[in-house]
Image 1 (tube, rainbow, N blue to C red):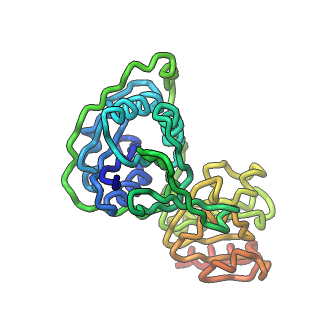
Image 2 (cartoon, rainbow, N blue to C red):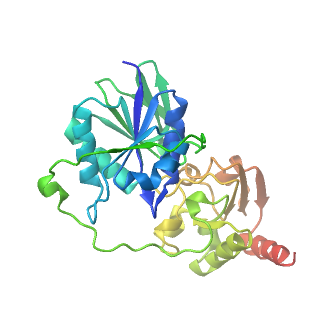
Length: 320
């Protein structure tokens, strides 16, 4: 059977749909299939935004109170699928997305393809692209069994583009009795404090690596990011060293970013890091090692010591 209906498991925070959800809706819309969204929340709050990006209907569980979304969402989707529903279910590679996908795999007895970085519809099947060997190779995987197919997609794999369509219709999605699997509740939420744009949404990112020498020198990265109205990032090496929090990490095991400008300072260019930033429109690399791999993908390379280059750059920006 052809892929005629796609469900996107939507996520939202503070009443705003996540960018990764909008990316999935954009891709699904381009296939020509009927696109619908599923959300563990009040559907009326997000119907306009989901509709603008291509969802014709949003199936909503309603406010779950303090319950975690994994068990209720998976249970509700599984019950709906039993009555005949989508050919393909897409989820974001987030904590909640992976949780829901794992539960769906068990409830529906279906294979899940995770960490996809690309998707194609070929005839009656879906082909997922995955980064292998640290992103050095892209391999393809497909399904051999019956649908619905379940794919978990890495954020920034697609570009979110609004279709300007009308608000999605809201449909109630019943949550079955889940028993002990719905025993966990959220007692408190803590939002990480930050100033300026979020790392994975910034149009300009300045990242620092081991070439900075010591944790105290990371302040140069933050100062430059602030001066350029961008977001600071980091390589895995200095995150593992404890210089900066994990939330700053760019790479295969961190955040994937696709800014207009990416400035890599003292980063040699390990494959793990480049997987997370090589989609940037313009890459500027600053490194004293002219043989550093990062120069192989850079649009502009500066062979120099970051401790000399960055202060001069900051001085020039501050004098404007």
